[in-house]
Length: 134
Image (cartoon, rainbow, N blue to C red; front, side, top):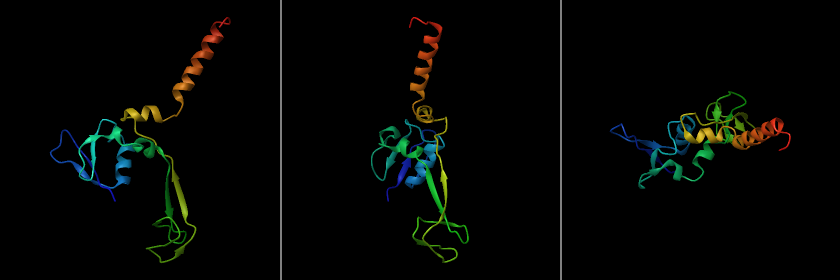
């Protein structure tokens, strides 16, 4: 599994190694922005914006699975619950809709897809209402 590292300009040490899920949490929290310098494993440092699909992946919903018997977290079924030993074919699920915190420049664009188009259409409608000849 790939390990990710984050370069901090004001700190002596870099953050990492991080699992991909940890990196996505940091993107969602606004701690990683498109300008944040990151690297994968032993690669050279680059801007987070160069990781294709990173910010889009952070916006996707996450699904968590829970044992229907003890309600402890489990992996996606089919699985055996590590807590109660029950064989699980259908788990309880929790779906979380994700956003990117406003600290990220990308969050502004992805919080409401199509918002700029909606604003443009609204401005056209307002202008048409004000000027019937348009």
